[in-house]
Length: 298
Image (tube, rainbow, N blue to C red):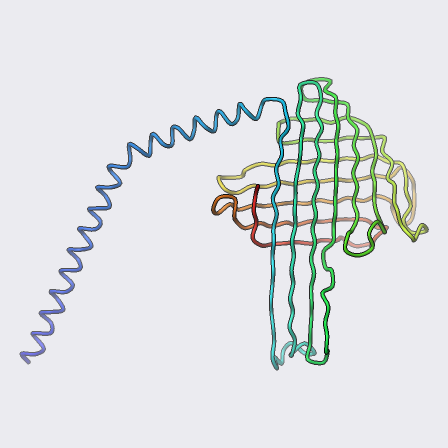
């Protein structure tokens, strides 16, 4: 019985000592936070001033450039996993990557906006029945855009647009889409543009000329980029072509792409890209793709 009381005494003493240590540590933390508070207020004030100066710098004419990319990979394997059916013994490897860049020259009288995006992906699926397996492309998109505009007002400009879209891994330029057109560009804010070109010709390069038909039509483009909250960036781009020619399948096409970047440390973070596309000349269904992985912003 004496040993039990002795054990209880030591346990109580241990808990009391730990409780005292915890109280002391919390008090030390509180004291440090109190000392840092005035300095943190000054730091926040300087940061606000720097952000304001950066905003003024961004308003000056000149070239503005930037780039960011996303790399994702997925590895999976199964060994006698019954519910997978024919793939109960298999290995799958998927590698996806996207790269986006822009170079804009913003002047008082005119602007020249250039952007490019590349999305590539490969997948290899190997089963025990196969002796060899190769990486096959699962994502393959190249898009280049160049927009020139002469300002009529502070927000409205007469403009000319060139846009090219194709694949690069397989069937390069088959099909390849080239839009050339003129019209107006509306810039309601610095990070948003809306292009309306009622005179646009959609050239299509393809070995199957009977299916892919070029035509005259109207080109509409919308592009917007912003920082949703600190460290989370979003860019969305919608481009559509509406043909003036009646045809079956329809000659209209449109692509809506969204990019998200979550900055974790000095430009390194998590990136996601998601795209939707409709083109009856390619396939009479809504197409989509996505890429998620590590990202880096230059």
